[in-house]
Image (tube, rainbow, N blue to C red):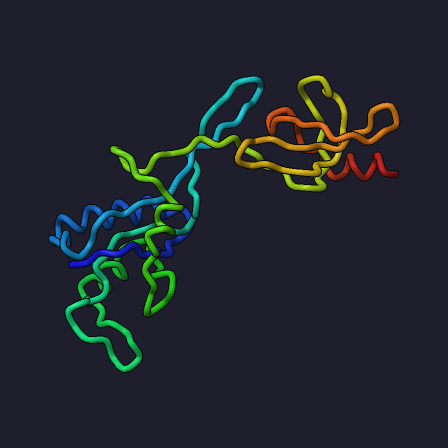
Length: 201
């Protein structure tokens, strides 16, 4: 049977529960021909706190699980609308999985294209390889204070964010001139809105 990747919508926070339930039931109900791999795309995010680096695993798409399924019966002709027959066993199996709301795409979900799957995850010997990315929780025009490095103590506005590299450009005032400085995401902290308002006043 031809399996394709589909996206399942889950209750937020129940992605792992849905994945484990699918994997356990596949063996019990002997659904290996219909159900393949089931994955939760994740990435490793690094952050520095108090000078120490730590790495956390974060879900790429909270509330979603990718599953390789034989959903459409390729042996039967399509109907007048070009739609293939659905394997009822696969459909019911997924619909009865705890934590799963349904398929992304509704009653006739479209499988992911291979390039879409490749873009979401790169498979290695132990499953998806997890690329470590610096953690950046700042946005453009946000006011921040630089807490480390040559410009420590200065406040300014974020003018550019590079989440992949974990870097920011911050516009600060030095000698009454506005300049852009490059800093790492861990070298700045957010300035509370109240403090920004007080300084403006």
